[in-house]
Length: 213
Length: 213
DNA sequence: CGACACCCCCTACCTTAGTCGAATATCCAT
DNA sequence: ATGGATATTCGACTAAGGTAGGGGGTGTCG
Image 1: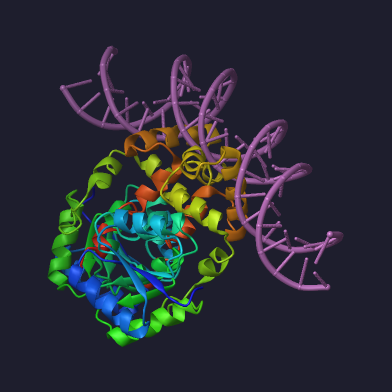
Image 2: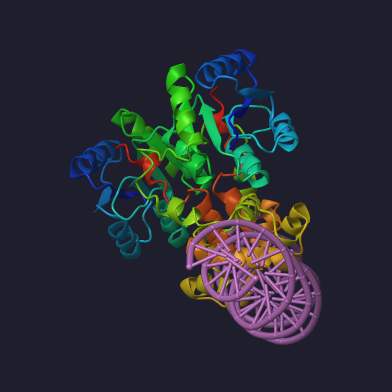
């Protein structure tokens, strides 16, 4: 990691982008910023600059389609830490964001210095485990063992793609994808692709959504 | 349908059970009631009395595991109307409840006479389409074409069971299950079991959960 | 009754999913 | 550099998923 940080700020609202960038600019003197207003722009920016130190990602952005966009972004750039910045405070969304590999989840209304502090911690390699999401957490633990390529495969599995399509999208052979799937199933502790998809979407435990009686 | 209604009230809180039963007792003079405090008890009650006219089902009950319990109950007794009584007001939970075949969704804080009115409508064969759940509704329409047995198969597919296990649980041959699966995939407009499971859990559209920016 | 819809069962066949063993490359520690 | 652990890749094989088509049973409705 170089001396100068490089960030990508992805939000469809220019005002929010500037606010985030200036906050980080104060905390990280001399940092460089890229801006994106849609998922496609964010992808292109990461393509141009793979050495980005962190992405601040808004979930409510054109092309994101909720958490699906996060999954896609991580599928293509598994090594870049992503800090989700969202207005949705739902615990379920938060939890799933972490399951899809987010390094932190920040509320949009949080003070800017707090945001900077969290980003700094992420750059130090920390991952902000969700306090209220630690009810089950079995999946997150198992999923942490996945390699970057396996993450990509899983992300596509979760979208309903089959091995042949995944192979094409990743530019490898179908046999290779199958091998990855086998490892993924073992690491996730399930016995079929369908179960893996169920697990990966945090669906197995709607408990946190209904416990409120 | 006989002159005397028979209800099953399933809630782990005795006070709630009594309140619901007395409310229905006033609206349906001479009605008969069974009580259950867990999913297993509810199952047993339906086993004893398959001619039950309607089930009032609480989602926060031992063994329910959220909506999974609803799916299981409907899988075993597809013809019995189920009125979900829950404290969770989340639109997503509501929507999924309908997708799993609930005939109505009542908030626990609703006035008792309103509850009785809704139950009466359900007995008349009506299904309370969710007002705020009609954003996409494509799945509900397609799923409405499923026969009872196909519902059972789908419910087990959604739990991650494979054809062999489904065949065993339903007491039929694996070839039969495959035939059902083929029809289900066609009716749902998908091309693989995994996609069907994704659809069936309302996961394909996290939009309603994140749109709030 | 005949037409229809649902349910169950089966054979045969093809496609997809998943396992196993093995080759290559990288990184890291000794 | 040598060894070892891990990632990535692939081909061959076995299991499961899915399709097409046929047969038989039930109940309902006109």
